[in-house]
Image 1 (tube, helix red, strand yellow):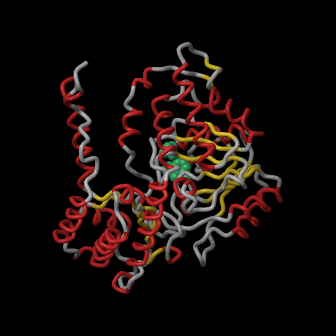
Image 2 (image 1 turned 180 degrees about the vertical axis):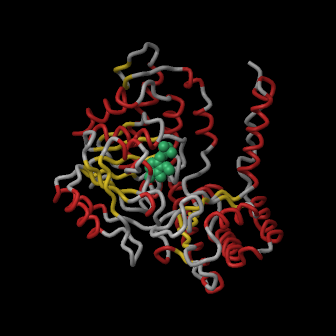
Image 3 (image 1 turned 30 degrees about the vertical axis):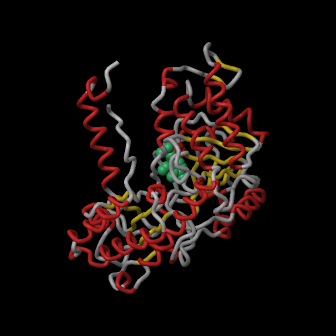
Length: 421
Ligand code: PLP
């Protein structure tokens, strides 16, 4: 039982290097976050040894007394946090949660209607080579070409044309709030089920800072690891009438044994997400995104053909539009990486460049808010990004890197963590 530094020095040194990478840069990938130490401990626990096929009280394995308690607590906390009648905390990932939603709500070959991938939708909302596009007849709605916003009237028109069995809300790269009530009314009008994948904005919903889809959607799925700040995994919420179908769609429909160590991490994260400190963190997340959007709307940035999609943001991310800029998405991503800021390039709606290069940047603030950043620090981050993008190839990367280094030093991440000893 030697520590990993002795048992497997090769892997240990990579773990240490990854910890340093996270500590030494500014993490602004909109789908990432930093879990608290308590979540790391739950995930690194002996629960990883336990098989527990089934659900609490109805397992196919012995020795489940302790894991039953953990899963029941996780379910109850998820229900309380989001005001849901039913919760399933077993999905290993967001994609698996979504696969279970399809299995429970529609039949193979049925038509589904979700936001187009290149307008900010997710792979599991109908992409051609994803299971969702292969086993279901996937139709898509796009954003309004003038406002770049999701527009209920466009969804309604598409729904009337395509007769979907299920309408999908939620997104991976979109900076605004959707109208869940209007979407539910459209679903009712065409006789479709309504599913919302709130993976990105679940933390904002938990904090009461984003409208909740729970009262409107038949089923809501999510990941636990984006704004919500929990372990990498998924979960599902629903009205009680879907409980039986969803339970069997997750297990045995999509999965075998649940990852009990991850479920313990989810329970911890749901507990954290109900605290005033978490709400404060989500407030800083939202403010930070607005500060970045404001800086990128400034003249010195706009002069270079760079703008902010929809002009701003209601959520934890900003979509930068480079369609009129010489800088493409790949170059923007590389430029920011060269000064210690990690983001990802992304297509924007009606993107003239191929997806591998893309004309957009997706910049998120959740991880830095977790690190402790408030308005003052986000103003500095916003100015670093704005100055870098405005200057493009001529950016003074040495000066910008030293400004990043100062922020990183002022807000240490996992200062006491020693994961390999
Ligand atoms: N749903 C949405 C909206 C997402 O953005 C993502 C992840 O990017 C997922 C689902 C998939 O989650 P996972 O990567 O855990 O499968």
